Amino acid sequence: QVQLVESGGGLVQPGGSLTLSCAASGSIFSGIAITWYRQAPGKQRDLVAGITRLGRTNYADSVKGRFTISRDNAKNTVYLQMNHLKPEDTAVYYCKAEVVLTSRIYWGQGTQVTVSS
Image (cartoon, rainbow, N blue to C red; front, top):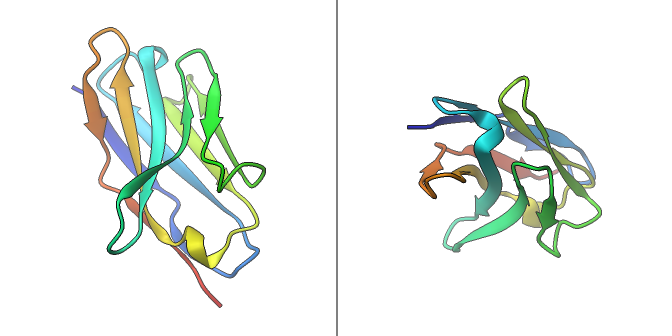
């Protein structure tokens, strides 16, 4: 069992920055791959960025060059640094954990990001 807690969301003006955190507990963090998704009202949940247990990253085209995903295994936490935010980045952001050994999937409860002037 893996528990995930997202934090760091909020209201920011266009062009601003936020850093989201996804803290995991309940399993060996170094054996977990983490992916951030987002879901805007009335839209499907889309992949934003992911990081493997070995630190390899991937990004949606819409956030490349603006968002950076990283992990701190000592703190059992993955971060999503979001710069140059746009109104279209407004969504609930969720982190998903996949335990590599078992392929089991866990989701956090989400954190709201609102980009507005």
